[in-house]
Length: 295
Ligand code: ADP
Image (tube, rainbow, N blue to C red; front, top):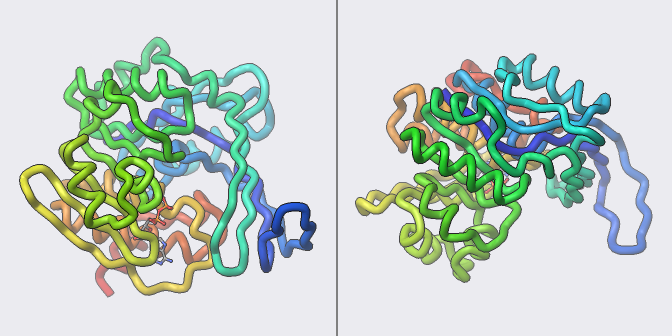
């Protein structure tokens, strides 16, 4: 089973032919609200992919918070660890262009209150196989959750996004680090993933660097390496490709898949999601991943 300790946002998404430059106004095609945030995204991806999944975090006491909670529950995520904080829910203001590329402003709001473990969190973490962490909540919260994971023998998986240098007290608790190419470059100073990978393995025992449409590279400290290509699909919205990848990867490992198989299922899950608009609403379920991998 999977527990996510992290962010929940309402994504406010504008779809445009071409994104506006600074000072420019453009007319968009469509507006959507979709529950998101890296934490909720990973939880929904894992739950849809078949993992028993719990979410620890906070939403605001507004209608966005109610909707985020409802969508998590509809995806079978256990929300008993999801608190309602005073004030607004986190929001992400996203512009997606016709190439499927995006730019995003995130306002943390309620996520800022997730700065430590609350009563009951340690028991929820201890009852899980994998703990999924990202950096959209205060670092003190991430560090406290990671330490609780380590104390209880739970596999600690960190998506180091948004990209910032990571403190030693966090890195020493992490079992698996899953940066994208940009985050790997920020952490190591190497733009080339094949050079970033060994540098990251000096920090943590196991690493996957995701490379967008070029797939991913995996390595561990025993010298095992895998390169898994992305599936060749037409991307319309790459928002949360990485979160879908991590959620499906964790669900697959939890279901007993070996690493190469779990990486392939993660690539399939994210390839399915980038072909549809909306982050969480585009995520595939286990049967769809099974069919896609079989073809
Ligand atoms: P992030 O969303 O964190 O920036 P990436 O862009 O590296 O992460 O994407 C994560 C994974 O999603 C990739 O390893 C790949 O398997 C899949 N993916 C992303 N973009 C595409 C694409 N255009 N076509 C197919 N798969 C994709």
